[in-house]
Image 1 (cartoon, one colour):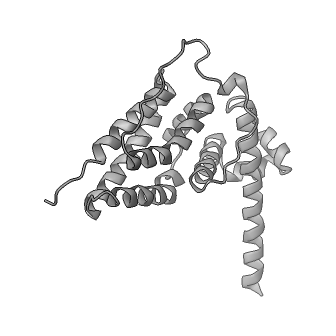
Image 2 (cartoon, helix red, strand yellow):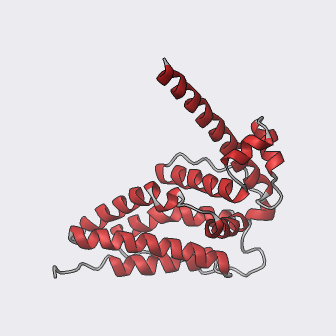
Image 3 (cartoon, one colour):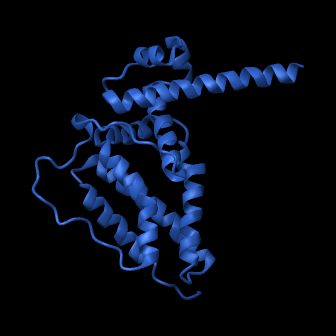
Length: 217
């Protein structure tokens, strides 16, 4: 009975946290990080300010939101909200671009397509993504993007590399390097005027390098 009671309380607590993160996610996408307050999150989630703060400060909550979005992007369940021009529109002050480079093989295309949803999400929510990169530097502990989410994506990358004849050890190493390249591109993007095309080009360059078949040492 005691165990059932503890599990029930734990389940309710998790549902409340999920509701708080869901409410925060909607507000961040709609209003941006700076304009969203803890009080607004509490109101939207129908909980007290103290209950929101028990989940974490705004930095922690933003990182938790990105963990959720990235997880949804990885498993194909992310549904984009209505786009908001003031925070999401890119390239309105620049001329036409020639577009990003194209992969030269089916495997390169597949690998690039694994990363494109994340790059496009960051492009769509550029200001919020910059706030996320800054928040990750301030938050203690490791976000899911460095743990379960990283393992899942690296596993898929490794399988694709093995399929073109790269041995398993090299494939795992290259998958980890590709994932690190992706994270590096996101942080560089957050700190510079890098465009989506620039990010895709940088990601593809890393993919091209790591899809070269290596002989065994």
